[in-house]
Image (cartoon, rainbow, N blue to C red):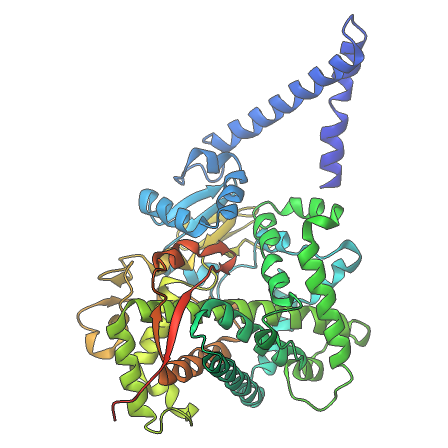
Length: 523
């Protein structure tokens, strides 16, 4: 990158010198030389990218996308990138050129060659998300989500797999149950204060943030009880916007690093995480994620702390924000569809006759409607709507994806949001909330292709915390809907919820205003 930048800065100085030798002023000569050079440079680059000689010339797509990735930055800023990708696929078909050197694929038979076991390493998008300060840049080598080299990723993934194996998962479930009980206590306190009108999205965000902080660091964030008085959770949310933009143009990371004020929230949250990790390091006995990462890691001792911090931060961001989005969307869809909510509450009553005060976690995966609600929520609103990008390995020259040869230097994007709403895989009503499509008794009357259902991605880089996330969704939904009746706050436009969801790699959420009442069981 530096040699390239130096070249395009130095070359125009030669025509500027020639022009300055004439009667033109040196300043005007310099301006004319640079302007002419860059105009010719951009025209030549654009012409090549639109020409039949470009490796992606045969793939359809909007002209502006073929010329520059700037348009995706614009769509990322308004939070509707996933919607735009869907519109492009509806217009152009299953494979669309969405960048000068990037295609988007919405073809489930090609997934194994892209993100599956026969797939490719992560693409340059991930470099655009690594906006760690330069002095700590080597720490990105220890964060599972940012590692592109397949061998290095496999090595780190083994540590994570052990940290989410059966024994640790039991410990994590206990931590979740304790935090879920705290959630109920906070809601009950609101009842005692006479206040049952609330932004349930904010409550769920803070609950999930507390849980993941407890899981990762044994940290008592207490954001739910004090309404995020220290702005820890808010800093985390704000920190998501910058990498959502830089990941579209990875070289822009250097600009963010050069101007620290562009990533103040991220740096603030990072400093907070380091302080929590130092506090946690003194506790040797508690079996949380910190404990298992440290116990199972093969990372050299002098790099162990950086490894634990970067991956614990990853767990908090990836675990709290994505699961909170799924919980909020599930609540929204249930409240918007009262019959579906009643069906869930009836199933809960049958599974847990004792008012749901003692939830037998062994029953949760055997509740068909509960799991249909969760699957349908994840189908319509996947926590990572459009950010699964892969690219041929460096030095490989290319990769055969089905019958398509993907040349090295080309990125391949997979959007779960697009796949999950494709009528070839989910029919009827691909854009409608309809949990019944997941029930076994409807198998013969619907199209439900689970190989196109990828809310947790798939293959070697899929979500390592999937089982814990599903448990959290099941447990919290049962806990809440066994105790409370939900309705939208009177006068609030419920359509604002879906309009307010923004694709910032993960889903950014607006307010979800509801009224709660205590539930009276029929039996």
